[in-house]
Image 1 (cartoon, rainbow, N blue to C red):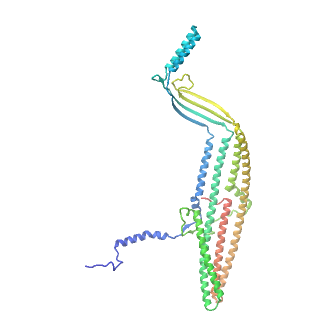
Image 2: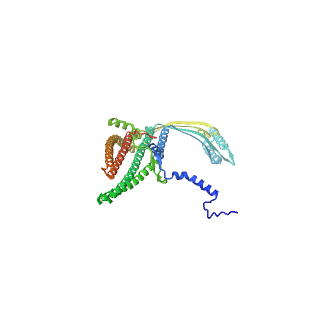
Image 3: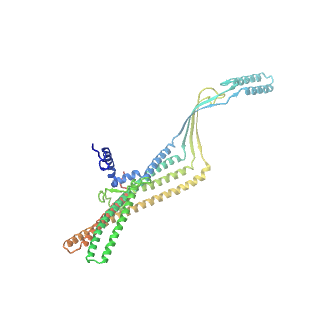
Amino acid sequence: MRVVNRLARPWAAPRGVILMTALCALVMLPAMADDGVPKPLSLSDAVVEGLARDPGIRSGNYDAISAHAKALDAVFRMLPSVGLSSGYTGLSPETSSGFSSLLGDMLGEDAILAGTNPVALSQLQKIENDLAAFAATPSDSLGGYSWTASKDFRLDLQYPVFAGMRLKEAADIAKQGALGKDAALELTRRAMAFEIERAYWEAFRASSNVQTLEKALELEGVLRDEMKSMGAQGMVTDADLLGEQARYDQATLALDEAKSGQQLAFLGLASLVGDANATKAPEAAGYELLTKPGSQVWSDPGSDAIALIAQALASRPETRLAGIGLEIGKHAKAAANGDLMPTVLLTGNVVYSDPDPRAFPALDSWAWTWTAGIRVRYDLGTLPGALAREKAASADLEKARADLERSRNAIALDVRKSLLALSRSRNSLELTKGMVAQAEENLRVTQARFDNGIAKRSDLLQAQIALLRANFAVENKGIDLEIAEADLDRALARQPLP
């Protein structure tokens, strides 16, 4: 019999344990692969996700829906008021003994006054018989008491034929308010789209800065080691070594600041895109930004400032908002003038009831009755307030005209500034590209001199660092151009919205 000492052979584990360990490893593999991987994100995806997730835009959307519903309600208030109702009313029981006593009193008094006149006696006898019949024939009787009930179906109509145009102006104001909510929502969406684009490019700039400074630090480290080697051979002074060490420390500090700036830029982008909020922390790995500067086709609108300003005035939601404010002011002034006018109401009703309310005595039967009328109302007590409201509405109307003019001037200034920023970015990019050509030529010459033994390795490293910084400057200016183009699209309200 062979005994296996598993304590001496720890690798000889049961097959079930090995199988379970392998399954756990397979399950955890995707999670481990995804851990720390940046999220791929293009510029268009960032705009779409940001606009879809932003709570401010959702709030504005529901606000616009509510405004349209209120505008529809204001229109419906102009329709006639038609009410249908039905009722049942039970009346308290009454006895007919009171009528008998009253009848006796009347007959006794009349008999005294009438004397023995046969005509008077005959008339009194008729009154006695009628009243006795009235008192003795209730609709229902129980122990000498009568019980009656009233039942009816009603149709009531009230229509403001003329209300000083106040209802119409109120409906128009509500409609303009709904249009204003739509324009405000578009303004919010366009501003949000531009902020997302700018945050995207700033994050790209921060990432490029980190990559550039990492490469620069690597070259500075090589250059520092080269200087130390030359210092050991007595080829450089201590001042040269200290200067190179200082440059290396500065590059290290710049890289740390760049990484902090990259994290801040990614945080801002995550907040705008919707990947970070009060209950959700941003991903530590950040983003893999897929859209590169210059990769998008941009339609140049030209440089004719007059034509572009006219286009912006026709397209910007700010212009529509100011125009809507002016229209609301006009309708508000008309409504204030309407307070000085009378109100004319057309009223009427149709009633089908039991008993007939117009019959006396009441008849226990169903009957149709109707009424129709017209009423004119003028409230003298509201005249002072109406005059004050008319004055306030006139002032609001003039304010709306001034706001429209101010908005138009601000849009024109915005377009001109965006055109200048775009022109400056283009010129700066072209000049920076010239610096790259110079840095490339300097590196080519330095490389040739180094190959021929004329230049030192430190000279070659410095030339490589200069070219690296020049290329980053070009990329930086390219990002400025992308932001300037997006800003002009925003100023002209021509950026596409999902």
